[in-house]
Image (cartoon, rainbow, N blue to C red; front, top):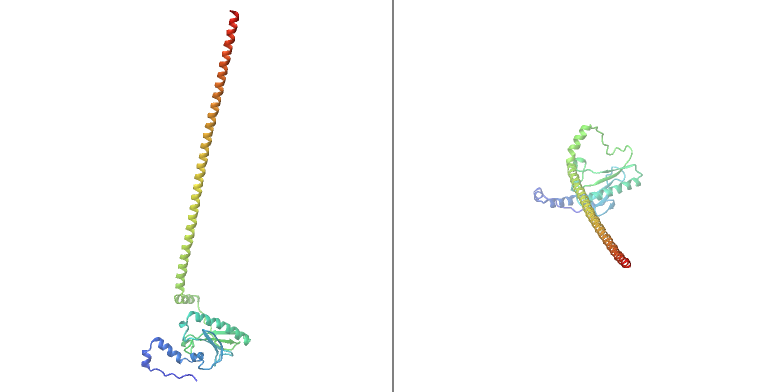
Amino acid sequence: MPKKTMQPTEEELKKMSPEQLLELQKQNCIFCKIIAGEIPSKKLYQDEHCVAVLDINPASEGHVLLLPKDHYQILPQMPEEVIARMFVVAKELSHAILKAFNAKGTNIFVANGAIAGQRAPHFMIHVFQRKQDDGILTIPAKPISEKDLMTLKNHLLPFVGGEKQQVLDEKKDAQQFIEDKKELDAEIQEEKEEKKEETKQVVQLKKEKKSEKKKKRKQKIEDDFDKFDKKEKEMDDEEEEIEKEEKTIALDLDKIGDLFA
């Protein structure tokens, strides 16, 4: 038997903190009691985040209720990781129902708030099979104009993060632009350094060529001087030879003169 709890007065309710009110809701929540095992149920699955039980008032055979283990009344109160896990489990339950009942389809349904058909103060995901013409969840078709669709889009966009996403996209684009500019600047700097190095090499090559030309000119001058010295020596040698011949001729003339004297 579930434990009975004393209900606080209206005055006591006014003095309660949000945490105390939440705890009171948990104590009075039938589904929290089912999860805790205080009320019997036909459990099909459970993990650290959620529990799946058979609905005692099924929309169709094998109707499953998937409940978060912690108490949350509506979807916006739930942590992202719990929502993510529950919908992964809902997918697995849907697949199991399709196979078990040879069903042609399933509904994965959430009633979020009393006006949307939520009758229990505990969030849940309904998973149940569908058959042809079963009349469950018949949604009437209401045509809408393109103009009205655009008006609705513009009205909803700020509330679903459209503007925020646009700002994020713009920031991302700006960040990408900055990164691209940095990369481009780095490439330009690298090209400048390469050109600078090439200029150094060209200047060095010019210096080497100029130095080589100087060496060649110096060598040519030295070679010319060597040739001049050699020529001058040859001329000196020829002059000495002529002087010797002149002396020899003079001696011969003196000898001839003596013969005729």
